[in-house]
Amino acid sequence: MTETSQFMRPEQHPFLGDENPFKAMMSRFDYAAELLHLDAGLYKVLRSPEKQIIVSVPILLDSGEVEVYTGYRVLYNTSRGPGKGGIRFDLGVTLDEVRALAAWMTWKCAVVNIPFGGAKGGVVCDPLTMSVGELERLTRRYTSSIIEVLGPDSDVPAPDVNTNERVMAWIMDTYSMHHRHTVTSVVTGKPVELGGSLGRREATGRGCMIVTQQALQHLGMPLKGARVVVQGFGNVGSIAAELLQQEGCVIVGASDVSGGLYSKKGLDVKDVIAWRKEHKYVSGYPKADAVTNEELLTLDCDVLLPAALENVITARNAASIKAKVIIEGANGPTAAGADEILDKKGIFVVPDILANAGGVTVSYFEWVQDRGGWFWTEAVVNERLTEIMVNSFQNVLAVSKKYNVNMRIAAYTLAIDRVASVHRLRGLYA
Image (cartoon, rainbow, N blue to C red; front, side):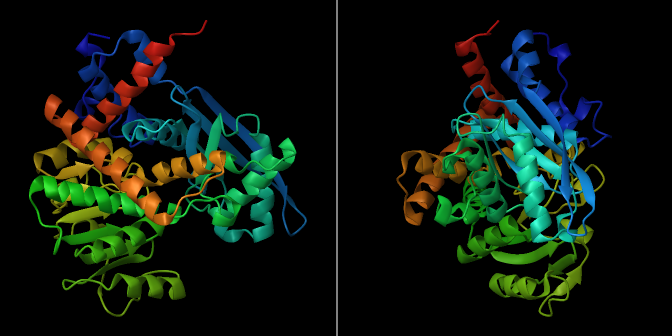
């Protein structure tokens, strides 16, 4: 596609007021496609999901009643390899959200150049109100409903919001029972005893730490003493905070759904983690000042690391952000309408499809180890993760300089170019 009129820059896109995650993703896709002069046919292929599955998931509740949940699985693009992407259990799951996340996974895997395509799944439910038995029955029925697309060579799920190692073990077992033999490589993020990889739990947070190092180095800012605010103190945010503190950063703010904490002198991250483990939330932590989640995003800091859900940085609050660097630990934390505002403020943003790719990278390592039956030490996992994350950051930075665009558009451009190249080589089956 050579006519630039067929593409729209993010700030020109009609979807900006919508904050629909798929449409926001497509606004960035269009800009990158323009830079690449993507031909019309390939443009149509890459903006269309391969498969979108909607299933009813009936289960027997502990009360004896039957409840029917809705489940989704989207395979966005598998030209580079099996679909790869998490499964989330949450009341906010929608097809648009799952489709957007599957697309992001496609670009994320391409940015770090691992041989996976993009997929995502979810079930609309409130896991906090469900017993372990109900969650297991939900997981197994959902797995059996989409089992025709699952497999080590076709679609490999992983944990996501409100799912964990135990859920992955249930999926692996259900798939294995249907196939009459154990298939460990059908999921990643499993318990180590079932073929999980050492270092997987920390991988996304560690990847955020690595790209933070790279970003500050690029900008000529010291890592030691850098003031960091972490929005979202779950697995990714808490691990990133702990690792950054070990590297000499000062974690001045942290938050979860209950609210935020601020300490000018810096939080003791391990102590906050211990408090949250005991009290379930960070709110009430006695050694810091309480702030709202909205105030936390606008604290004076060097690095802001949003590690919760989508669309926390929008056109409404972007102008108030004081951070010099944003490291997107969550998927889609910045709405498309905020991009231009952040650019004008000179904020250096490391986008989600690069910043949080540590998780899928070590998921790839887990898949490789399962298929080979040969497992690595945690030191080897971390060494190989560091190499991939550093190289990927530098590759995206090079594209940013080549096209004179921000890191987000550069990451999309690099990823789309890699996926498009594979499509050109493979041709169109008809």
